Amino acid sequence: MSASLLSVNGKLRSLFDSATISEERAYGYKQVEIAQPLIVRYLYFFLKHKGREAQNELMISTYVKAAETKEGAAEAINYFDTDAKFDKNNHLRIKDFGAERYGHPLCYYTKSYVGESLYLTTKIMELDKVDTKVVNAIQKGIGTITSMPAFAAFLPYAAGASVGVSLFQKLIDLFNQDDAIVAGHDLDLHFALENVRHLQSGRIVCINKKEESDFLSGGKYELSQDNRLIDMGTGNEYTDSSYFVIQVDSKPNKKLESFDYYFGASDLLKQTNRGGDPAEIVTTIVNLFKGYKDLAAIKEIEDLSIDAHDEEVKKKIRAYHKSMSRDIRSLYLERVRELTGG
Image 1 (cartoon, rainbow, N blue to C red):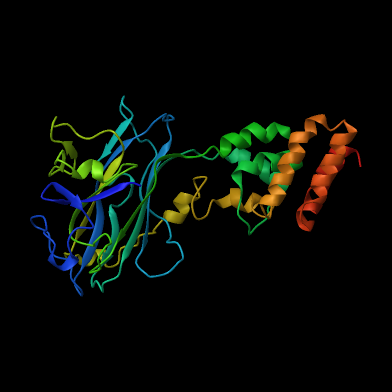
Image 2: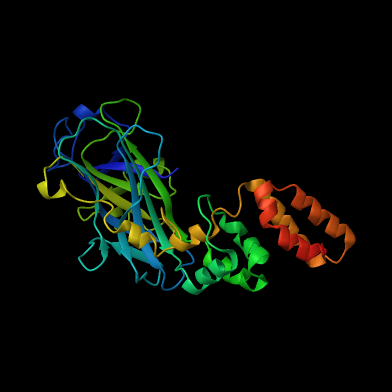
């Protein structure tokens, strides 16, 4: 469980403490109230990456849900830097978004808060670029098919079936998992409810893969005015794991009333191998397999293919092929014939 803690003039406290209406606030912050504005934005990121790959793009994206629904929220990209530079310790600090890069620190704004709960997820990733030559090769070999989820781990077997072994390594490289710096920090904030994290104005520090108790005992850590998490014993910034700071306040900003959280996001996501619309890759592969049983059968067939000259192995290959669903069995027929000779 990752830690999410409220700062009150630098002192850290649990977001479970005190009712929303009567909470102590930091200087300059207005109390969250019904029918008043509400703004949620990022203030600062300290990112620590293990085993960083060079020249990958950094993307910070946020999912925010204010409606009481089971459906997931759309992905809004808050920050995208094609040339993020970590220092020699693999640390990166973002205190200003600037005007040159894609992005904006705003997570949520309403001119009239009505008491809704806010559900936020923050993801921070280093993205591996898509090689368009590989995409084109997949399309040429398999063809464009639509509508079902893609299972990246099995794409090399799809390549073996329809393109050839030569694409195996390229596909593995293409679908190499993006490096998650913060895979998904969840933060639920509720108004005027007990035994939950309270939506209240101030700064919230979110610390990846750490327990809240590590930061609440003994006053060892405080949040500085410039949003750094400081070890009070040494005066140094906390660097054991990634963390970021969110600001919640109740001040009007008419310019934010028409802010488009998702402007340009779909085009940007098409440049990556992930997101709501992974463009050619998903439309190329997605309907090739219909379930885990089919995927497992294909994997077993391809693992056996090296010994396909053996008659007992051929029987196993035919058996796995027979176990597939009808549509996938038809798609994989030519590959099985190639391995078994009929």
